[in-house]
Image (tube, rainbow, N blue to C red; front, side, top):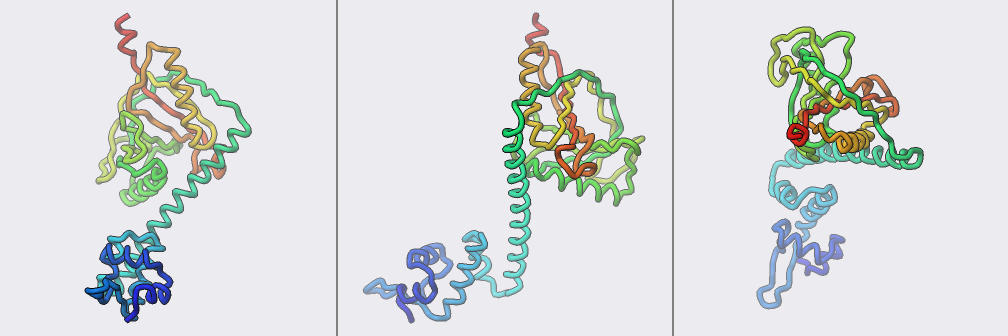
Amino acid sequence: MFKIGEFSRLSQVSIRMLRYYDEQGLLTPAKIDEESGYRFYQVQQLPVLEKIVLLRNLKFSVAEIAEVIQSVDESHLEKRLNEKYQQIEKEIELEKKRLLQIEETIQRIKNEDEEFYHVSFKTVPKESIVSLRKKIPTYFHEGKLWVEFGKQLEKQKVDFLPGTPDNITIFHDECYHEESIDIEICLKVKEIVEVEEPLQCYQIEELPLVASIFVKGPYEKIASAYGSLAKWLDTNKEFEMSVPTRQIAHRGPCEEMDSENYLTELQIPLKKSLDSNMM
């Protein structure tokens, strides 16, 4: 047996971490001297410690590490590693998008003053659509929902209206959420047809009055467009926003490789404000 200091040198793990692993129930000493309190470890514990250190470096939680080292089935470790691999892949994808957003924001700061977006009125007629509505973890996950939507359309052999490739996204939340966003993605169809869940096919109602704003460029510019809407509403106090808002991708990732060529329309329903009705 080895004293904790010797075991620390042999394993290249600090005494502090050995004590931490003991406290967490991951690696308890083979023996603790009752009189001196000295901790002793066996050479057979080195492989277990190596596995703990490896999993910790791979961002496994204490609970996940405990589950793996307590399992006698080696295939369980392989399964958990594959799951962690997929999780990290998703995190990398999100971080890459954040880096791109940072780069584009820096570039806009260098090249442009504050943009002002023109707000116009329009009526949006009722239309027949096929749609998929779900709550997604973040706005970054909308692209994956469109992939799922496409697979369902192909599986159920649903034909959307030719000549109108515009993608419609309806945001059902009454206020802004950073997580668990209730969105519905839609395509126009010629007529109502029967579909199976999770798809829906129905007629969306006419919007008598919407504020329409066109945004050219990457989606990160949409926040600035809402800033222009806020200034417009502040000037035109007889109107206030309603729900749900819509986002129309007239040109998006499917049509353009360069995000600077994207063309997105925001459609925000308007209603007369209570103050204006009282005047």
